[in-house]
Image (cartoon, rainbow, N blue to C red; front, side):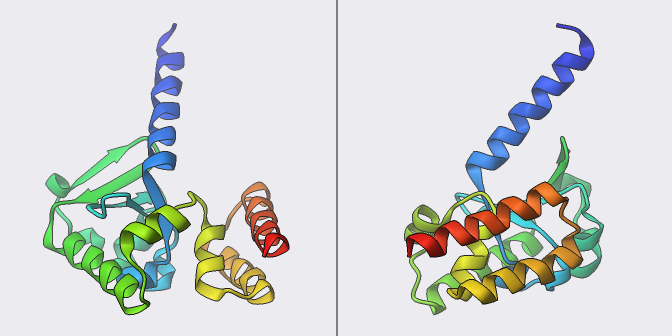
Length: 162
């Protein structure tokens, strides 16, 4: 295996870990501005993960003030941990879940789909509104056509099963 193949293999492993051990949440659930974009949280609610388009979470979420010691850049992700800002936002998520009568452990099991469709369905519980939210968020997050199509398909599938 040459150097490039090794790097690609590592990136693939990172993506698999992020997909299996984190879930996407609405930035507002963390007490962040929605313009922060796609935000993930690990299953233990101890880390916040952003993809490398971190300028949005850094600017709109104040994460530019997090020290290098409290964040890790790996693959296409930045993982924020340990500092008071991260703990505060994770506490906001726990409070959001509790205030909506959601047990975080139950929520993690039931809604921890590693895609935005699960979040949108959970937030709206209305097919048309969910599709509108996807369109609205697409303007901010600039999903590629494939990502957008997958989200739309998963929302449609959810409502067909319901």
